[in-house]
Amino acid sequence: MIPNPQLTMPPARRLLSQNQREDTTGVSEVLGVIMMLAMVVSIMGGVWVFLNPYISDFEDNTNWNAANGIADRLEDRVDVAADSPEGTGIRHNLGMRTSMLQGLSNLEIWKISADTTPFENVDITDQTASSFTVDSVNSTASKVSIQYDSGINQFNIDQNTGLVNHNLQLTDWYIITVYNDNDEPIHKEVKYTISGLRIITSLGNGEHEIILVNNARIEHFADSAWEISKFPSVEFDQLATGGVRLSIVLTNIEVNGNLGSANQLGIDIISAGSLNPFTGECFNIRFSLTNSVAPVITPQYDEQWLSEYTLNRASGTLESFIGLVPYERASGADGITVTSNEQPIFFDVAINKVVVER
Image 1 (cartoon, rainbow, N blue to C red):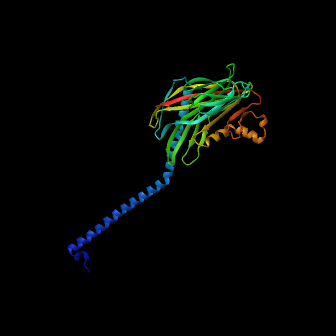
Image 2 (image 1 turned 120 degrees about the horizontal axis):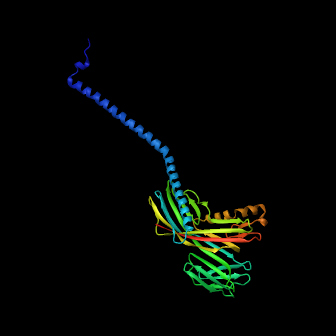
Image 3 (image 1 turned 30 degrees about the vertical axis):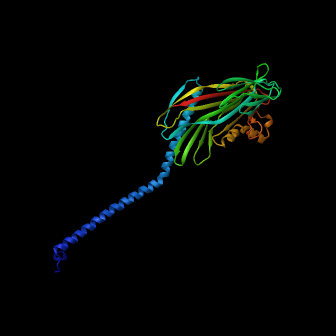
């Protein structure tokens, strides 16, 4: 009979062998747990790497939709305030958790002119900051009135040179009215500077901007060009009763103080009055604008308004065309006018001013 080695082994050695087996078992269990945790972490990391772009896109899409919702509500409230009596308006709360609201000054400069009589063709040319010349084809222009933010002043026209020295500080806007010897208005020219709002939203690839200016909406992503999603309010219609009508609505938004951002941003939108420099039948209409948001905006505006003219020019039907046409250069860079084939042109211009403040 062969003796059992464990029985013949000294007690101290048997105890040492048993402890070694227990240590080996403990180490195996610890290694198993570590390997299991490593697998879980690796799987979770892989899932995160795979899903992170989709999560980021989802968050960006949510924030972009929220910014456009803010723009929609602001446009609606500004329209309501613009149509309200001066000094009245509304208060509105905006959720600005991921966006910021700012005011932007001097975004657009509009120039609009027209004769108010069919018997004269008048042109006003700036000479210096405090003078201009008035050229009338039939030499009936006698004096001018200048309406601006500080009041109304009248000046005589030099009959030899057509020069008018006014020495006024004409900054944001003015309306020049030319009169004949019988104090009848024969021509008007308007210059108006437009301000607006900017909504800035942080996205994964940079900042997204929405510019609200003069009833238009302009958007910009950090990795793309500026896009116009809504154009200023310039409408041309042929009337059933005869004649055509051109309507232009300008809306100036001035911001008092800082607006900033907040989970609930409360703002007051108040009407600051309106002007109606043109209403009724006019002649030799001309308007132009300069937009400073980006160099590509003004040419896109002109292209939009002259789209029908461009189609008729390409098809060779300009002789019978009625609508908006370029004043000189075909691009519209010198301004836009109206052709009506001898039909009367009714011209309406409304200028609304709105103040936004916290």
